[in-house]
Length: 285
Figure 1 (cartoon, rainbow, N blue to C red):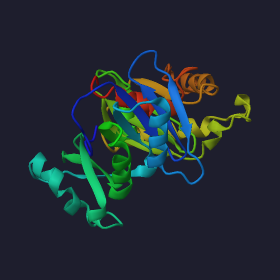
Figure 2: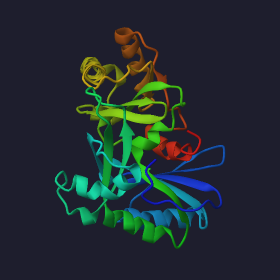
Figure 3: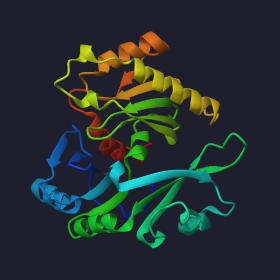
């Protein structure tokens, strides 16, 4: 997980996923229950966090924050030839021609990627506007300590065992469907698959869904990852989808790919809760 902000160990942990419209929190203790807090009209994420902490009486707890996609961007580049500790400091200068904002207003971090097809070392660079994250920190730190903060797609990697080479399909309301390759707990590749917002439409009967386009997009994405990027093909598939459509998607995948896809969700854990749970699993992954 990226370490934009990290504090010393103290007390028990609460993990919170920040989306554009709501917060989803999960406590470290079992049984784990998901607590949802919808934003009030015009309310910022920072103010909503303060309200949630107050409502749940979480003052003094350690907080882990999983950031929704609206908080960050990611791009992949060849890894500059310099020591890792120097690279972390040099990222703003490496990225200055690739971003639309002054690098002084951004925070950067990176993860290593599998070696590219030409034997070139590659990294995925994550960057976020500094001000919104600073506002979160300023709002929380009088009440709680921040244990860590990072992108939701990296938090999802912690849900798989270290020896699994998995493909994860994840659908959060308000966001596009994503397909991610995860190997040994590390993010290797992801692709946004557009056109499947109807998966969130509870008024649409499941038998009205046609999954042919989804299966075609999955095949294209797998072919690109294994053919062009030379990644290992996943040997396990995982679904983080609304429960009502999961059995139909599992059946379609079985019929076309002859693969038994495992669901990461159940009646108690929705897809939108999984990044928060992934953050809790960070130190165990």
